[in-house]
Image 1 (cartoon, each protein chain N blue to C red):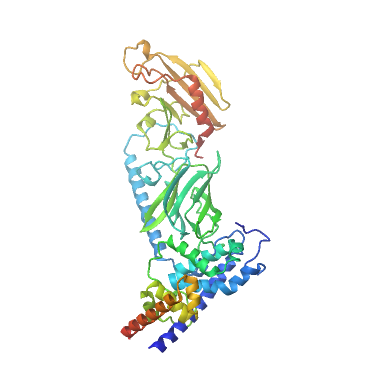
Image 2 (image 1 turned 180 degrees about the vertical axis):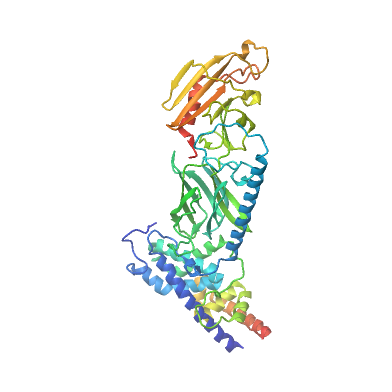
Length: 394
Length: 165
């Protein structure tokens, strides 16, 4: 038996070396590829059928898409039985108007603010995949990301920079397992994914990717599990659900479908609020500045008709019209404390689109002594923030 | 860390003397030990990582007495982060028809059941023709330990193959 065993072991060695020579050649050759720092064992696998994990991922993705489509369909059907909300939105509102929160749970809480986190890391990214739905596009890295961060390249940029400090990628220069550049389908809001940096240190791997979007959009990111496989997912919002931002202790901005605001304050994605459905001012109103969330339904009863002009502040693209009013929202018997300000902010985004922001600044002290009236200076700062960061979806 | 730019040393064109020598002589040995330890898939990936690391750090490695042993540790570190490293080890990629003859399934199955150290020692010594001393140097263990691993590994293999037959 020992003679036979040794012979068989020797024959095995011959086979291993024969396989290995292909591997060695592939690995070493990949070092010469311009821009490729990682060798590609995957070159050897390129002709194989998809691995079971990839098949599972594909099946899971298909199930998720089917679920999303079914949920969206259910919502659209039931929406048709409700009275149509009277919302004036910009003429540029996109067709994709999936409701937030219900059909797009992965996208809830999206914003354009930088994000970072930490997850279990793995040395290698096994696969990269894109999934596009009405909610947006999800980019999957089949890997544990390790310490990760995600941010826009610069102010106003539409390129996200994703840094995965715990995962690097084998790259095969087009024919390999992973590529340097990916271009998703035309429906995706992600235009291109490019590996821009690679730290190919076995002790300390890491990759950095640039994700070029069609435009600046809110996003979420995090680790999840699909079909038993740990993946790092980046969800880029494509739908146009309402975004609510608290810009000031007294002011919330509710941006209806078709718009979002990139602010330094906390903004979160919400389903369309009743407050947003009922409060449209003017045919071009798209953003409403609501003074005091405690107003509830009464706080949204904005004054009809044109507002008198008491002051005008030219912020370049922004005009504020303000006037004093004495009408109360709280009782039929106005008192001195019920003097309040109405204001209307007109933001001209471009020659074709005008956004009207309307709101009330008083009374606050009567209801809550801790709240102070909002000054015109406050408004200027707030509007300036909006004007510098708000962007139409299209 | 050097980047790959136009005019950079080429790994294939052998204008980097030490690395070309390393690729010709030591890389196969590194591949053999990593595949023996982790199997063709994870071991192959660990090998790829180690080679890329060697390319980046070739100035450091050039002065090392035991670069294969060092790079074996680099490959090991890479596999530690990998979730598949605990799976059963398969030395041959059966899906890839490189060889005309089918793989020795019984032997591969038996090898997969050995302890890692025994499998590495047996494969390196009896399949790849390493000496006990060479195995000991790369694995950073004593020659006696390698001898014991080989002896016990062969004994176990014989028992398993006899059972099969």
